[in-house]
Length: 497
Image (cartoon, rainbow, N blue to C red; front, side, top):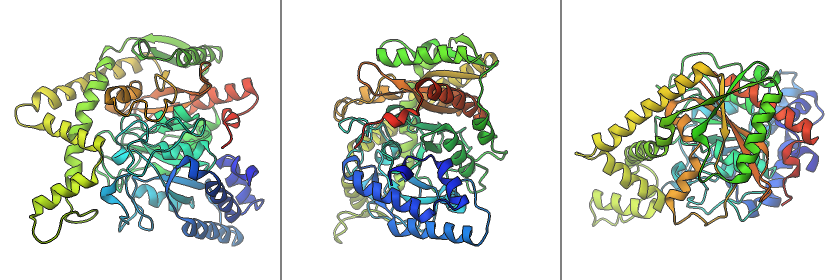
């Protein structure tokens, strides 16, 4: 089992295609790993044991029949519990949808099934994707496999923890303000936010519709590229889906190079609040890029300093609108319906019981920002700042091919440390939020361990919209250089559970 769970997704797929391993053997090995460690990690909210084995048997039957298998056929995956699945509950980490089994699959879910990816189950997350630590889940926090007393990032901490604990070689996350990249950074894994509209949002429970984006999570850049290719593409069911070819991400991951590329370093992505070890590893990464043939360009993007403030007006405003659908009338939790209360009273009681503190905080903030007399002062002003951020990116990409920064200002913090300080929690997304506001693509990959605490540090790579392949071209070059430097993939040194 140990040998199988340490394989990359690309290696697993190759061994299944050649007959060296069966998909059932691979699935059983990962289910056994989940049984062994997930009680401590709590990466999963639901395990679909029978469904996963049935998918695996179908892959083995295809191979035995001589059918050509896809690049990820038989590879297990952990799916963030924000995508609808008609054969499993979709709770979005909330009590208000506890036990709800949707009547349809999300487009992303269907694409995974079409690619013969084996879905192991649904992973834990901050409720409605609102958080940076997975402590806001109604079902309890997830631990970071590097140190179970620390957070695995958020909102997709369940997916990142599943990867770092070898419970799955692939995972899916969503990124509204950094919720793929920030968990990847603090767990030493790879996470990619595709260009907004590059992956369908149909069937993804909405938090902030103009910001939300699903994407791939993995332990290597190539594995992330293979998953990216499988889930991306135009979807007529999503009006924001981009009707254009998927960038050649797998080809880029297989041919990584930064030779002759212009790499930007933004001065606003460092300063007060940044951990010394994070900046040390980032500066080393910049020197590494220079040694690999890149030209480093200093950039000034002044509007980035306003990104956090703009985000925490735009995202709550959109969430207050999106979450109005949870009214206890059609699906999900219903409280107080004893025949004596009005529909309004039942709705109020249900929301009081079903939504957690962080969700209520953001609904209240967003409703206030959208209210009569305050719309222009708050939401309207934040959208103007968003335009300025987009313009800063456009100017930057006239000078450089990609931008690099630390993914997060600090390494994983202890569970509970920021629970009562929302502003300190929000600062975890300081480097990731500008990309969501502009709709660009971005990646986080490991760039070493912070010397003061021995925990993973992430390097963020940002590319223009629909140039997602640049992320993989740069990311695979950096990853290869790190592997050569240390002689082994970074995660081989992750603590045993």
